[in-house]
Amino acid sequence: MTETIWWKSGTVYQVYPRSFQDTDGDGVGDLAGITARLDYLAWLGVDAVWISPFYRSPMADFGYDVADYCAVDPLFGTLSDFDTLIAEAHRRRLKVILDFVPNHSSIAHPWFAESRASRTSPRRDWYIWRDPAPDGGPPNNWLSNFGGPAWTRDEATGQYYYHAFLPEQPDLNWRNPALRAAMHDVLRFWLERGVDGFRVDVIWHLIKDEGFRDNPDNPDFAPHQPGINRFAQVYSCDRPEVIEVIAGLRAVLRAFGERVLIGEIYLPIERLVAYYGPDLKAADLPFNFQLLETPWRAEAVAALVAEYEAALPEGGWPNWVLGNHDRPRIAARVGPAQARVAAMLLLTLRGTPTLYYGDEIGLGHVPIPPDRVRDPWERNEPGHGRDPVRTPMQWDDGPGAGFSAAEPWLPLSADADHRNVEAMRDDPGSILTLHRRLLALRRDHAALSVGGWRGIELPPDLAAEMFAYERFAEGATLQILLNFGADPRAVPLGEDEWEVLLSTRPGRAGERGRGPFPLGPDEGVVLRPETSR
Ligand code: GLC
Image 1 (cartoon, rainbow, N blue to C red):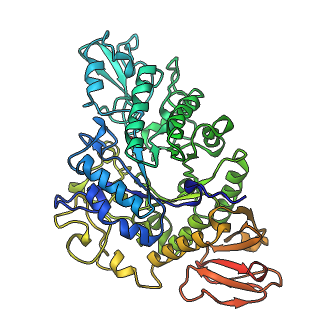
Image 2 (cartoon, rainbow, N blue to C red):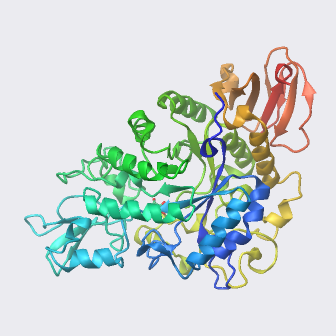
Image 3 (cartoon, helix red, strand yellow):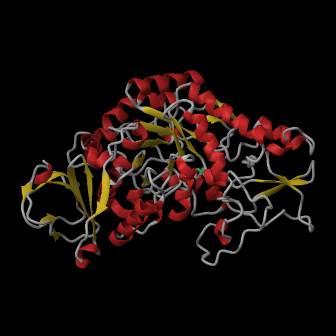
């Protein structure tokens, strides 16, 4: 039962490179900054670092618009800085996962310049060009994820090109074999430099409907939602042929050994699990974003975990995400008390957890004054921007919170003088210490890192506010009790003596007792029954 493959037992930590550590004084983080903070990551106890894009880019979407897939943008440093980063990471037994952005390039990529040059260009078909509709308008009703139409007319050739995101991010055509081969070479370029895997951007978008049919209306659309939700995205993405494309990417990785392929996929559970592919030959870890979308209530979360566990294909390895550079911060969503419960949930569920930088210090919502808005989405559709979740990491109480000697590209949180690594690292009650202890516990107990999962049935009055489950491996069982509510509870656990291995409340570790377990308000605990000692 015990699996030791690194990407199964380990924890992934996401670094948004603009915001982790600036070393050259321009207010923007860089690769040398990540290298300088590797000791911190090793100290924290994570196993792999996923770095959001640092490739050459005009930064229309902050690096998710790539102009050269095999070059480092000067803003972030050089290829040699990258080689240093990876060598230093490996020296500390940290894996390095890159962000691969294959669905679209930047409009500034030389491939697009060639493609757009003429209808007969050899690279015309590397992108998605269509004739106008009979009325001269866009070829179909597909919308951009960042607002407005997903088609832009190119005057020179009279055709429209498709962009699921900004007009500066034209979609590549993955039905074209030459494009596929070129992209496989990009993967090899980085694999040969030693990277341990890729997080693949919007992987469920890679293949579009061959007939470019209109998307149907979405009956659940509400006006507060982004415009893209007006239609159900059934023809513009999640097409069955995409699985074979992903299997092709995975095969490139596997030629280099146990490198991991993580796919970014926002789909409901029943569709998500299809991305493991037949015989588990597609994504190793189709990112499971369900915790980002489920209301923070005990019963909803318990039902979600059970549903996901039941839907996984035989042998498919689970994974969990609580935050990323696109979604509201967990501490902002659930508040500081429940953020601790959430950390325990993330790091004790079965499957690979991904921890978003800054969540370990409980960074909350950072308001962005209008004159400092950077995210193009915020400009197109106010209220949907992602700047508040991309603010700089806070290291100490010095100028720029130790992130930068210059004015940071986005503001710091108002409480940066005490919400920072230095202030929290030796505080036994800090959320940072809690994360570190949870990560250490995961490493020490196979039950947590690679063991099985089963729910604990609770009486209905408790189930309304609490989620409880067991993790087990090699004859040892641990119990996790999470109180989603603000009232204390007495949790019946049978007659065995229990021992607190870790609590979200400082000072309880080591406590032993018999009978109902006294769980405090907003408390989570990991317990060891005496039979597992
Ligand atoms: C993904 C990224 C997001 C980006 C988009 C377009 O969803 O996570 O940040 O804007 O793809 O590449």
